Length: 105
Image (cartoon, rainbow, N blue to C red):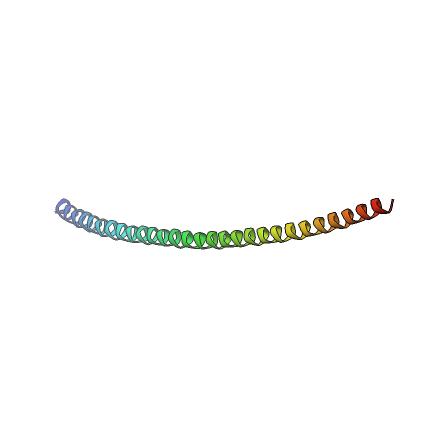
C-alpha cells in the first residue's frame, strides 16, 4: 500500500511539475519572444529616425557649404574687380605723372 500510494503521489507530483514546467517554458518563451520583437522594432525605428536626422543634418550642412561657397565666390569676384579698378587707376595716375614729368623734363 505504501509503495502504491507513494508511486501515485510521486506520479502526481511529477505530472504537476512537468505541466508547470511546460507552462513556464511557454510563458518564458512568449515573454522573451515579445521582448525580442519589441527591441528589434525599436532598433529598426531608432535606426530609421537616426538616418533621417543625419540625412537632414547632412543636407543642412551641404546647403550651408553651398551658400558659403557662393558668398566667397561673390566676395572674391567683387574684391577682384575692386583691385582691378584700383590697379588701373594707379596705372593711369602713374602714366600721367610719367608723361607730365617727361614732358616737363
